[in-house]
Length: 417
Image (cartoon, rainbow, N blue to C red; front, side, top):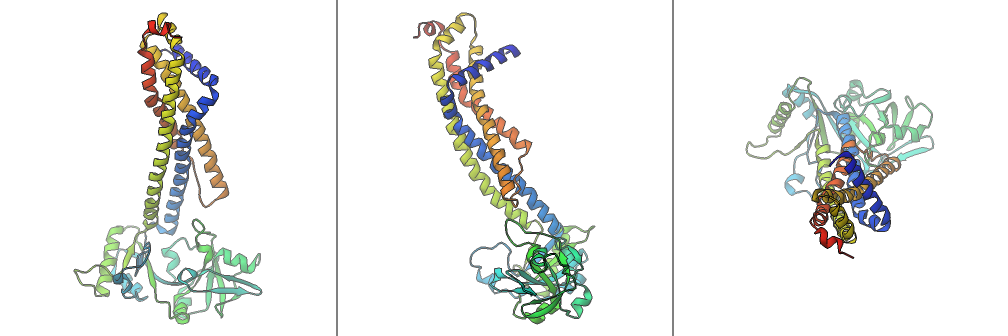
């Protein structure tokens, strides 16, 4: 087919669509729904994937966590997990000495509303509740870069050794208590005890409305254990040395902890080592289910749209039987007739695809604008895929009517009324 023939077929296709606007609009509705769902969900997932990856890097791409129980376990835990011995803060020093591939090792204990515990912090007439209190060692900020101090300083070894009543708070807590005043050096009252504010963290609102560094208050671990002896759920964070192999470091920590906790050689670990990718792995599981659901919805939309395209093209073939006869009588070949009707079908589905892409782009923009925690981002890959899917539906469902038109007998066509 020459360029001129392609242009003529395209113009005929547009004329046909313009002459049946309502019918054509209803036909492409399924295509629009299918492509819109693919584009909008893909934009949201792509944006969130990048956001989750950035979050993992901010936590520390070579930072592992150790806990008594799994991070992502829903429902009632099995008894074998509930009866595990608590981890001890002294393990941190033991791991530093036993694991040559490990850089920083730090222990920490958390007290917060998610565990059914209440905290409050107040200054003058202002009061903040529902924040997370955590007792940490000085190495905590090195092991987890997310906790970066923007004002003042972090907890020092001197603070830890002498259990000094000092505190580092999140920026949201600082804004609520002090407003425009400088928080560093001021005294606050937390859970009935006086603390000196020595630092404020960089702003970090958290993910999807969940708690971030903004909702954290950090005190020395030695002081935390003194004031809250009932909190026994100790956790650890350790980082891998730059030149060391992460798997080797993880194996060293696992072997050292099994030895320290007297775990039998044929027994499973009575602790959990969580890799820095646990967040992205959990997210991949969630988005995998979402992608399957979106694929089903879009497939139904595209199938309905494709059947509509086939139906309208069959009707068009019937309505234009005489035209087909005239074209064949003046020398049009089967391939010319087939390409003409196939072009009409593809044009129809491409219009639906373009509309679906535009609507999907608008949806992703609105989501990104109204819900900043969901950074929807439309990529060229998905735009190209949307166009390809639209064209493929037109070719697949338009071929049968186009082939039927091409095989009509010109004599019968000319006698058709």
